Structures are given as C-alpha cells and as structure tokens.
Length: 176
Image 1: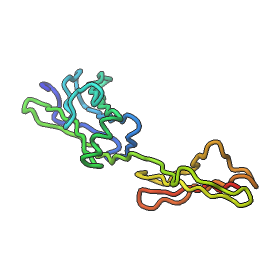
Image 2: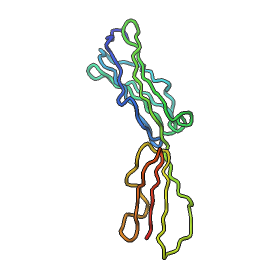
Image 3: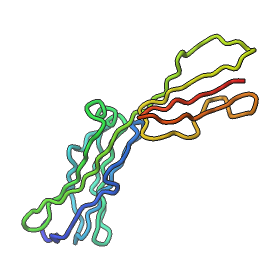
Image 4: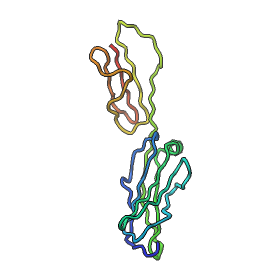
C-alpha cells in the first residue's frame, strides 16, 4: 500500500482457538497505522468461495481497519477431514518496498457427536435403569448435559455430566 507506514501491523486475537464445526467461524484481522482505506487483504489458504469462505476488507476507522474471514460450518467439517488443526493467515504488503505484514490464527476443529448404545432396550419397572451417552470430539468438559425430557428430580431422574477424558465425556441418566 503506497504511503502506508512501515510500522503498519496486522493482529488477530486470539492467535489460537478451538472451533466447533457446527457453526460458522469468523476471524478478525486488524490492520493498524494506516492512512486510508485498504482493499485486497489476502487470506491464506482461503479465497472468496460461496458456502465456504467469505472475505471482507472492512472499513477504515481512524487509522485502523478490520478485515474478516468467515469459514462456513460445512467447510470446517471438510477441513477437519484433512487435519483438525488449520492455520489461516491474513496478509497485506505495505510501504513503497511492498513489505509483507501478516497475522495468523491457528484453529483446532472439533465436530462433536453423542452416542447412546444400545439405542433401545427392555427395562423392568422394579429396578433403576441407567442410560449412558458418550459425547465425542469435544474440546473441554461440558456442564449441564441435557437429557430430554428428563430433568434432575429427586426419586425420578438423576443426571450426571461425567468427566472429560481426552476429547470424550460420558454422561449418565438414572431413572428411578
């Protein structure tokens, strides 16, 4: 960008992030110390592709501008199939010497699922019955696991979140 200061810089906060593939993910890249509106901020390896990546240059405010990259949930699932960890970089060249300035966010993609095995079973009304649900591919402990239509009611239902182990957690419902 001709006339742009050599002190211009790009920042992405946070630089690393856990991302759930069931929703779109947006990354904001802030370019500071710029004199005027910038166009053509590059995002690698992304290009503007419908239903995958949406790139926005943003609008200058004072001497800064925020460019945004939105990754669709469907694209996150596709990226995870090649590698759960992905790095996305915004880039712009500045000054008369076209010095590249970059900022990167590394994301770890999770695609959670829940499995109850067996899905059906016969039970006796004279005994308590326990059902377990394994939550897989989760980044951290989940609190408040829901068991519809059950709610934690004394002498009827007992709900336990369970404890995470690696990227899985086993929740339990006991029917009294």
